[in-house]
Length: 131
Image (cartoon, rainbow, N blue to C red; front, side, top):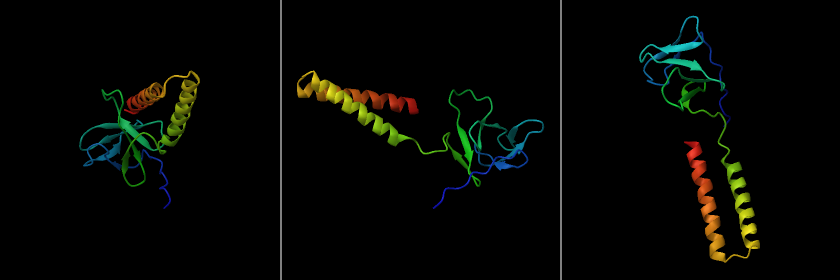
């Protein structure tokens, strides 16, 4: 099955509201924004292709919606996450840490403990960064 082609957002068209899903986004005259006729939220086009976000929200990380041609999809990234690359880098770093600690001639349980703590720290920072 082929992925859907993204259609460019057009300021002349109306779209269903991604926030309330009951109203429709109507272009606001003389601006590059849409307003919902039901929840009265204002949305603007974002840097990523075919994405919109709310204008002036108090949240540091705003929710972004991507138009796939038929409906809004929640999310910022258009591509799949690069988790495979993260796993390869993590494996490489664990291998380097393992070899380095074995050269020092530490007891095996201490080497395993240090490697496990290192992996837990990397995973913890990775999870915190994704939030």
